[in-house]
Amino acid sequence: MDGDFRTEFVREPGGLKHKPALVLNADYRPLSYYPLSLWPWQDAIKAAWLDRVNILAEYDDVVRSPSTTIRIPSVVVLRDYVKPQKRVAFTRFNLFLRDEFRCQYCGARGDLTFDHVVPRASGGITSWENVVAACARCNLRKGSKTLKQMGMHLRKPPRQPDAEGLRNIGRKFPPNHLHESWMDFLYWDAELDA
Image (tube, rainbow, N blue to C red):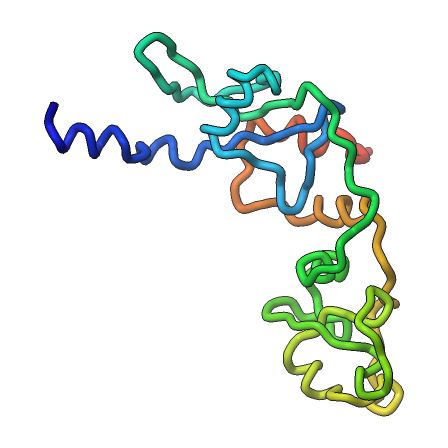
């Protein structure tokens, strides 16, 4: 066998590189909206082969083994229901998602950090109820002063989000690529326009 053939075979073909499968829970809802629950095509095929998922939609592309030809799944649904998390982890990402990736002082989007509403220097703690997303400009302006001292106001009071609320906020931020076969499954439970 030619060495170039072997190298070409091992490398992932360019056309198959970006063929993720949308993963739905057994109730036909995505496991998560943001980030959108996607598996690489290899994982989707493996799960289908192991009978862990049902394939609902497929790409036109196929992969082949010596004995089998398989169309690449674009939407799969888990056979067993995965219970969603009730508790939301206090992470930077979840904080930014709760605040819809906007500064809670001026509403700007972009390069965000986080700010303690009651400064740590004044006894403020790091919690859902005391930390908000803030742009660098507002964070520097506020410094270790209180909102009252700086004459600043929050767009909304910080609170601990519930898992369902955070999932619903995530639906507002679709990824850059949405395959047409996913559309019936992503927003099927959204309110219809009159």
